[in-house]
Image (tube, rainbow, N blue to C red; front, side, top):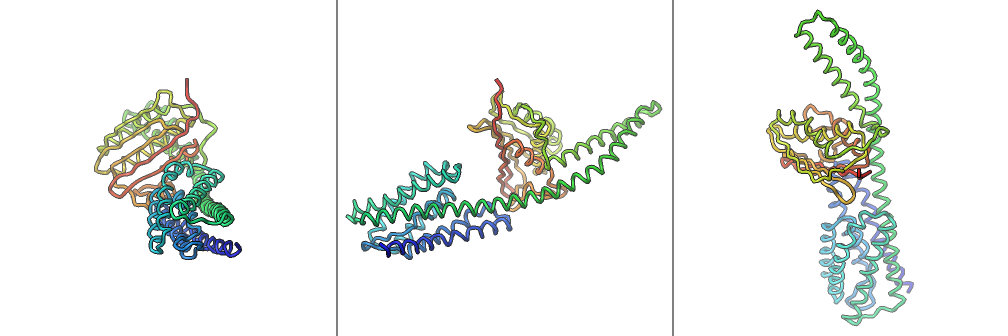
Amino acid sequence: MDVLTKDLLVNFLLMILPLLFIQIVYFYSYRNRLQNKEGKLAAIFPAISILLCLSFPFTINEGFLWDLRATPIILGTLYGGYPMGIFLTVFTIFSRGLLGGDGVLISTITLLLMWVFYFIFMKKFQRSQIPGKILIATLLVSFLVICNLTLSYIIFDVMMPLDVWITFTLINIVGLMIALILWEIIRSNFLILNDLIRAEKLSVVSHLAASISHEVRNPLTVSRGFIQMALQDDTHNEKQRYYLDTALKEIDHATDIINDYLTFAKPATEQHTLINIKEEINHSIKVIQPLANMNNVSIIINENLPENAMLRAEQKQFQQGLINIFKNGIEAMPEGGILKVYAAQQIDGYAIRVTDQGVGMTAEEMNRLGEPYFSTKEKGTGLGLMVSYSIIRAIGGTIKVSSAKNQGTSFDISLPVYEVKK
């Protein structure tokens, strides 16, 4: 029994060791703007854990290997999704097949049976908090271990002593819990670091914006006052009055730009009211329509929202957030094209998808969207999307971007339901 426990503990250390290097993948992917590829890189470490577990098992019956490979298989699949799960399943079956023995059949059957549970619990696991994740993962690893032991007895009449059975099952469960908690700690630390870096950048930009805006507003206010006084003079001819009116409008436009410049730093949440999502989408499209016409872009609306689809937000800011996204889609199609706007109701809120046929973005460019002063446009500042991201997040929504070079870009906006008007 002591030898068994020692073998399993060694197996546990070998299984957990590669997991500790996952944080290197996160930091490398962040540094090189490869967030969308971190899942593929992270698949290496569960595979290494599986290989190490298979290399140092304990045996009771010839042809059967007992180890802790269930933990990296299950955690890798639950966190990495179906593609990683398929890879780890095939890798495990192939690696176990090379070692030979009757246990190959048992291992293959149980790994394939596990996919029934993956389909049932995968999405629930990814939406759950840590206690829920531990519960789901524990159920899965318990099923896999017990299924292995039971099938070994039924098919090959291999009976493991009860005390060994219990010890083996408990160490698998405890090992999985420790591995899951470590994985969560690594992911949480990386997300916190990422948020701190982003917050620091936003803080620097917001302070700069506040100081510059304060200095610029004063001369704009003075200029506006003098132009208004000049307009009161009846001696101006029609052409001069046109020039003064145009100057006044442009000063007001500059003031609006300054206000928008500050929006991403601190959205005015205290002014949130109930607004109709459908009306705001239609209004934003009407505002941006002249720009679309100038760029030979057609806007197609396909909305399936109820008339009482309401959202709690600041009306002008929400409109500005949508307009900025529409504007980016239009400007991404210099040769013209179609901008599609789709809106529908979901179970937990509303979804808006904006798709263009533009130049698209690389993975690095896509992952940097929303950063201060990053833009794919030659004369862009990136502040427009910063404003949009800030506004959507302030009202409890999320923005996800999918794009490929020369294949267009899609912005998926998820909005919460705050209140339904009756």
